[in-house]
Image (cartoon, helix red, strand yellow):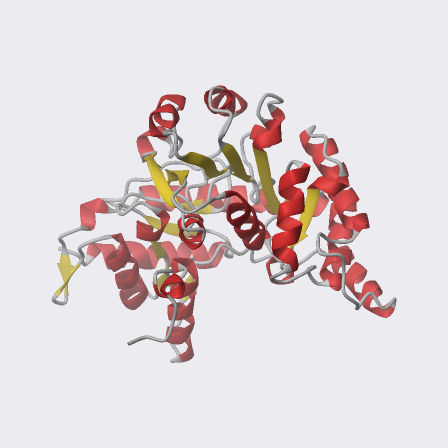
Length: 397
């Protein structure tokens, strides 16, 4: 009999972390593995951000910080939200956390009671449903197929709402699909929420600046529902600061105070040095961010052209983030070397073992038909990775 709690036994391992781990284990054996499994920019943190961190250490910013973060950083985030997004937040409405993942967990655990329903469009980021599980809520999924560019309609949203609905969670730009909701599409969803004043909206905007179509649009811009929106954002994707672990929420004061209370019992304030680096990132402009975005767009166009050449793969052109989420169902039931591919997860493992390319199966993203391919890698690596994928898929008969 296991000594572990039902809570941990019922929790799934992060699929993205699992595939990255499998890829590293294979690489440790001397295999040349190209990893397209992790959502991590391959760029370096901007120099001015690193310099701010060094300065912070030299000036002995090495003590405990306020649970919600330094006021200086929270004020800088509030200015960013005003200048870049046209959103008015007082710094007291900002809670800085140890990564956007913790910010999401804080919000969900503060809002969702056992048995309450959380509406999640699929495909979705792997941790959404698991955090709901931790809160003892119930995930209600809305399927958004590739034919809809992986975006739900207001009619689908309305149909999913019940008296038990408490929270709606989504990301735009989306992980894993790269889909981006336009202002008019968000307005359509907002009008549904206007009719249901007891539902809160968690808007994950961590890929805000990796957007290839237009300026970022936040659902918080609609005043009729703004007080019920919890914005999730951070520095990891835009400023290549994944290892620094810094994210934040912007919400009404009741939720902000609740997140502070929750975080105070788990991690307290995030790293003091990281916070000072976050101030520099917030105030340093978007030059490095836009250069990185342009590089991602070039890679997107490159990989899209290469994927389109592979028979059996069904792929759309994503408008943001740095992922493709192609439909691979045409390979189900096919075999190579006595091994039959039954689903997307098995195809992902096949590609790792046969092509030595790490991807992530779509099952943990709520879509059993697809795999996620990250193009946050150098162009020569991407060309070679897709060549290997094409060759490996060609062996399946």
